[in-house]
Image 1: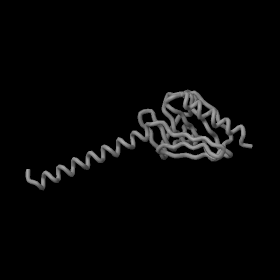
Image 2: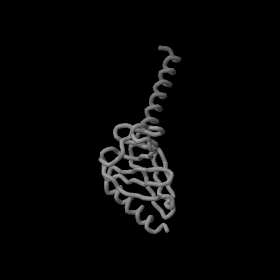
Image 3: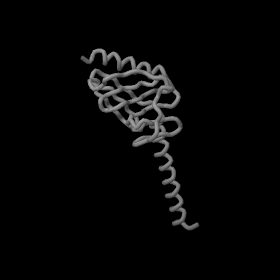
Image 4: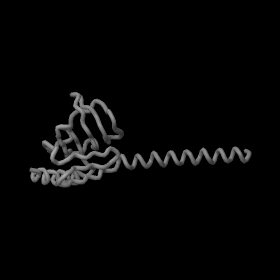
Length: 143
């Protein structure tokens, strides 16, 4: 192999390594639990699909078991792989919902606003419960 062929092989190898690194980075960001921040003004979720809900726009919030989740029929702008669902989806009934959930894990927080329905859980159910308690404390004091 001449020196030009060796250079081309090095470039190809470097390109493949960079692509694998980028894919691994996005996989890591997608599969880790979202960062949740609850304040008197907003309920914020940070992951690949960020979402901010003003506290004063929340009409209700509760928790569901995984079996009570609506059936998802269509991913409209999101990620769904190996039981992780992030982004915007449509239910079997045609309702648009935002998900940041890991399949099969209860509880799931459901937040309802005039603009949509949002579902969130964590790998660790205690983290989900903690977020829900923080949210309900702010909701009690919003008026």
